[in-house]
Image (cartoon, rainbow, N blue to C red):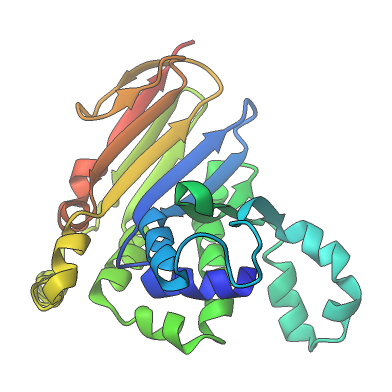
Length: 262
């Protein structure tokens, strides 16, 4: 069932979802990075395809919340992993910090899928992002639909985003900035615009996609530089939401500095 749902999610991943980039920090500077995909529209499509109501077996609609830590899988599947070639074993073991989350509620049309990594310090994040890509590639290597999706200009733009984004955190100030050598590629932008203009009925759906930043801190926020960012009622979370396509075209609009209280 999970495999079936994941394939369907892959089909719609870049055509009807909203993205959330979330980082949660602990007191010691360690934390968790999760990239989530809100695919509630996918759920509506599934409902139509399945005819609504109960499935053919008469079972009630699916409701589930699952979190998979790769480090636990390494223990549970140790015997099976040991039978693989050494190179493949090492690749799998290197993903021990990967986290995958799925929340599904057919009754209320909720379908969220997240993949990320834990880290001991933010300096590990660039390496963690590489491991996340490797984890996602495990599915694309066996699923042609998922692999073809990666050829989309929108897909490439979203995947390449972290190549020019810098993160820093010293316990008092957090920054999301663009790398000094960042330079917008006019060729890529032209290809992206061309692809969007040729989407037909899907164009409106693509143009309505959003990208949200959510950063959770262990103590209250004193200030945030981006005027469009919002601080939560408890003062420990900052959120910034923007149209996805606009963000890809103008990534500087998603930069910010967060200063925490002493």
